[in-house]
Length: 394
Ligand SMILES: Cc1cc2nc3c(=O)[nH]c(=O)nc-3n(C[C@H](O)[C@H](O)[C@H](O)COP(=O)(O)OP(=O)(O)OC[C@H]3O[C@@H](n4cnc5c(N)ncnc54)[C@H](O)[C@@H]3O)c2cc1C
Image (cartoon, rainbow, N blue to C red):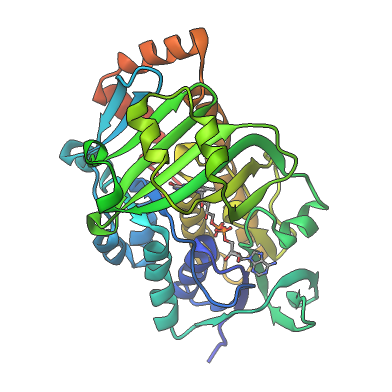
């Protein structure tokens, strides 16, 4: 009997677990090395488009994912200066019919948990935590992966899913800098009772204000609400999941209408992210080593697509490996060729959306006028390239 090719996945986030599942479903024996004490996700929400559900379906966990999601009726953009609605995109039945799957919001640990359960149940996936990967050495038969504690794991291929500060990327590219956005995001999850009644909307709602915006939506079967408030400022380093400062967040939204601003007074605890991305690059691979998810194409959250792209990457990677008859280097070249344009379209569109959300003066008026005039069908047509995609090659 032929032994299964061994693949090492560095990082057990949404991207790493999706990659593990896709590869194991196509006959690889996968070892996931995760630096954290345990496999898990931060306590916050995430929006996922139909394209993410297409990816979950391919990975065999679409129904489990859909069972954990909350289905909003629409995506709404409000003007934070006036309190008026700028535009809305219905994501009800006609939307689902057109794109073949819903638009939904979900708690990150529920989404991660669906992938984790499936990985745990798979006989060909080994999950190992407390293993911080620091680099790799290519060998004649594949790759040796080194951890901080001095372990060596051997495989025929390595997939770097170790996030925006990826050690694997550092080695593949020789080191390229993170690009600071100057944007800081504060996150909190509120019990439903603490959500102001006049804002308990079944919508992913975005309040756009000069140099700031905030987003809220229901989560966890309407038991909680997710809140993200983002503003522009001078920052020198990216940061994630730091303790937030109530005074800082309140001082940045003083110019926003009371109806929205009062929501920022509710959370007792905030977590703070200093956001960044990286310039697009044309190569993610070094022979039998490649990158996936934020390690390959970290993006701002404004399109709500970073995790969706990581899941799509996993689908494309697994598909190319399944066609490659053990030629991982060839499969990884085909994978990156298929993914680079789509993933970086999201990265660059997200930068642009940040500007649209934070517009002021004449730009704000143009935004309101252009978006306010669009019909649902026009929005759907504009999103076809994104929500109609699966991650698989055409
Ligand atoms: C405020 C905010 C809101 C967002 N909202 C959305 C949204 O609504 N929709 C959406 O699709 N995306 C959203 N995103 C983006 C999304 O969170 C990321 O794109 C996604 O988590 C990337 O997944 P990943 O697995 O590639 O990387 P990560 O989530 O960063 O996971 C990397 C994993 O690797 C581990 N790791 C790191 N280094 C090492 C190492 N050296 N060795 C071993 N393990 C390591 C980490 O512990 C982690 O488990 C948002 C991001 C932010 C900041």
